[in-house]
Length: 69
Image (cartoon, rainbow, N blue to C red; front, side, top):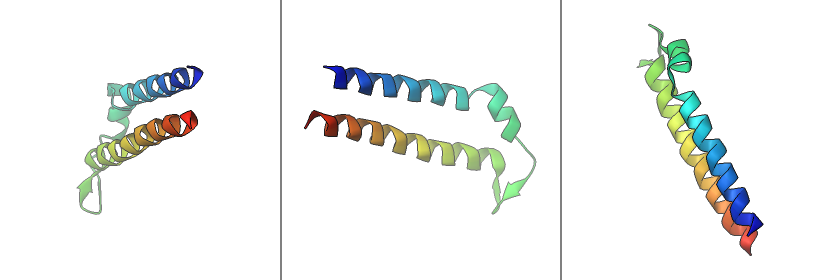
């Protein structure tokens, strides 16, 4: 049972990180009139964050299932 609690705690922390990373103050920091590789900085930030966020969730879920065994 403690393993499930750890997984839930990790997922709650990740959810809070996601809310903070896609909130107004942070988005205003990356909302620039510049482009990187022809992509606006804001769009690049959102895509890279989303990719990393999905990877972190997958890792948290996998680590939780590995702890069961």
